Length: 387
Ligand code: FAD
Ligand code: UDP
Image 1 (cartoon, rainbow, N blue to C red):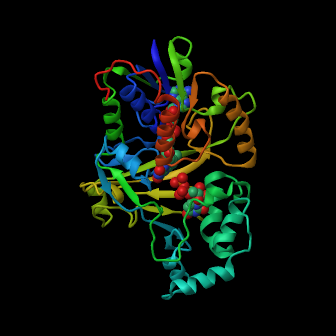
Image 2 (cartoon, rainbow, N blue to C red):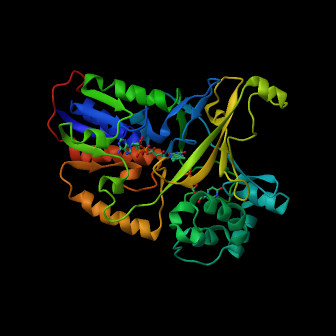
Image 3 (cartoon, rainbow, N blue to C red):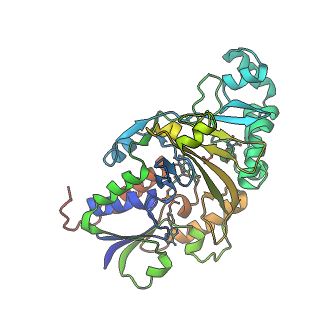
């Protein structure tokens, strides 16, 4: 008999399991249908020992000192900056759009005032953008929308930007300063030894109270395991057997190209393969971006690798990476959320079960909030690690 069965060993499931085991002394069973901890944040060395973000780049960032404090129990940090370029019309553009991008457009130096005036003239006056196309037209105008957003968004989602919620393209900052960081948050850092090492420490703190079964689907254990409470972080429609119809998810195929120091040298390169951490390809090729994570980890190794992301349809044979925020999906999700609301003894958590485009810090915050609101006052059991 377990106090809780936790489905999904991604960030959401791990934070919850850590809280339940160490704060309440609950005995938990954690299952994941993948063979590793960490869900999409999982990282591992490639054949040359280069630490690789297996499911695409995971740039940790947050404005919350509380979250940093919580995670710092399990990791030290490597402070870094996430810098990206957008490759189109044969050159690398400073991205996200900032004063440097504008200067590249003009072919000369400029200043904030001139860029602000230019934006005022070029922005399409849309007071309340209803979708991602309107969002970007209202923020940067047609020329920059066409150059950087339209093609990328169509490739990533296989949808017109006008069919996606404004928050999709609205994630990307627009600045009139020369700050070219990809994200706005004040704390930008990676776990010093990688995400997987951080997750291992999280589960280690749970001691004997935690049993982990990897490569095991919820469906395999749900009828044969006795448990008090269920924490579910898988796709919410799957839990309810898609009784109202399937929610859409977007999947990706990741292609890793590894370069040994020798193969780099043969190409006249040393240490790194591309000049930037991340290059976005809005208007060419089948992939959206190419990421050389070594620029951010600063790992001391003469080898490197580049991971390219090819968007693809979600099927039975791949993984659901993104909820797809269209009107249809958001309406459908509400029906499942209403069912979830009245499920007794089940907590739905994380990016798939709350159908929300959550960054890592948001996923951790959601899990901690849920623990505090729902479980913190539950009965404690005897546990050597209990405070
Ligand atoms: P997940 O990581 O999806 O974990 C859910 C787990 O549940 C999975 O391991 C899955 O196998 C398991 N599961 C599902 N159903 C079942 C079942 N029936 N039985 C057993 N197990 C099941 N965030 C950032 O902050 N910065 C970034 O730079 C960033 N980059 C990203 C890049 C990509 C390509 C993607 C896809 C996401 C990115 N994110 C980033 C978001 C980040 O991955 C999420 O915030 C985080 O992974 C959410 O964790 P989760 O546990 O909710 O979901
Ligand atoms: N986007 C774009 N051009 C870019 C980068 C992003 O149009 O060069 C849009 C696209 O719709 C993408 C969304 O902004 O899906 C969010 O981008 P982000 O890089 O935050 O995506 P994630 O890291 O979540 O995959």
